[in-house]
Image 1 (tube, rainbow, N blue to C red):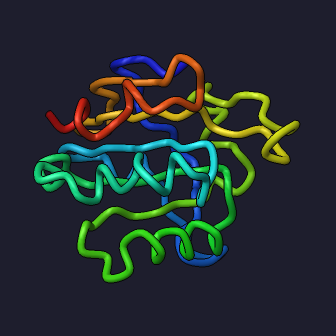
Image 2: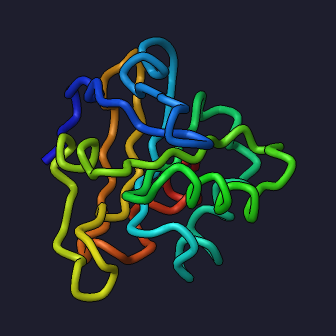
Length: 155
């Protein structure tokens, strides 16, 4: 499982469309950053409270570059981002881990196929500094919204 001090995996994710390649190892190579992992775009907890908590948090700008990552395709993540932050005022970027390779590299995958169609990412928040993991906050039940919420991460 991902640990404090680990380097961010150099794996391409997708943004906006399948050709919009983003590598978080490059994006987060310098300065602070935050990766928020969620089990599914458009799911109730993710859409109603978890991600809106970050979008509306007064200290979001102090987090550096912020990314939401889910095992979904680029089109789904793009639509979800537009539904939550239509004018992109928060600066949060929504990335698809279309084949789950980033999720597996962090070792945060869990078997969700019976209820979400495929294996998914545990819910987490990882803070970074200069390309290294600074803190890891993974929900103990994979899906809850306790240790990875904005109020605890951006406090």
